[in-house]
Image (cartoon, rainbow, N blue to C red):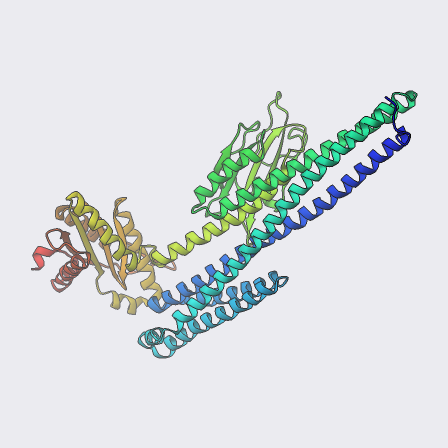
Length: 564
């Protein structure tokens, strides 16, 4: 078969080379477009994260203000103003982040204005409280302006989140479209290149051996292009997987759930590598294994100190191509003579706080494959862990008394009705103990508020030490405490009350190295169903028994039937 006159080997290879260059240029342009789209997707995630942070700080300010109104603790007063300042900084940062979008910029300004109004109303209530007392502050609250401002702020936050979520969907769609166009164009370019190369190869057979070298060069170029496409496809898959992983993390309800999502996602994102997530304990003195996957080639300490990890000390990834020939982290054991391994540690940090690190290892020589993907995943994990810890802290603030660490009165009322209903269904008793520290006002006057706080905190610890796993210890108010004993008859409640009374009499409390005077407690007991079937009724009966104990000389236990 005669070839066309225009199809010379030189022209054939020239056409193929031009097509390859065009395809390469198109691939590069689409890669830049994909990177830009990815940047905006990440930008939207960061805006959503800042909105969550702003919302959490506003709730934290509300919680601090209300707790201060209830307790008068200056720590909560200071916490309110700190949250106030941080909220305004977050609002200002949000405006800067969305300045590129007029609609979002307008919503961010509205969010900042509604936040200022909400915080201003909270501050006004504090001012009324400082000047005129709690009753006046309650009157200020009951005007409803605070609730209206809260609703306006919540509506503004929701509108901004909805706007950013819409932008996120648009940007994600654009990123996916770029990826699809990239793959389609590359495939068509390769097909066209192969067709031209086929004609060039047929022409080359009629030429001398020098033309064979040119054909081999084209084949080599084609393989390189295939590798490039393969790498881009792998990058696209990794980005899609990272997007799904980030979405799952945003939906996690607990740290354990986020870690399980991480364990499963990392096993797929980093095939052939083993990994361990270390999280720092609350004391920051040691880290613990929170999640692990794969079979490690190198042993790692299960409870290392933070200083044992170079990544945590330098706050940047630390990777070794061969663990045998470089300085390892102290938590990584020396490799066996038969093992050649590479390893890496990636720090987990968010909002200026170190949370832990990710340890990876795999066959040497390195670098470990997918290290960039692991770093991006760690950024997502760090933000998720920080947000989940913040949510957990806010929940604890809502149900815990900050001084004694016992549950507060609101949690008491909810739990009492729930436990009472459960015991009634099972035909079991439930006892309620009301406890009051005797002569607390005199103690407080003699030793000052710090001494009174030290006593209340110590008694809270004592009460917790006398609780079973199912018992619920609460601070009812002031020096009054309540202990709910599910499934406990009156006889067991009397025994427990006597143990607490004796332990309180022997309790030692120190303040600034000085021992404070010993105190006693009085206790009143009621039991369901003998003394009532409702939670409020049981509390009232136990409270009457408590007053009977105090009227009878204090430092004693009185059950409800003795009170009547």
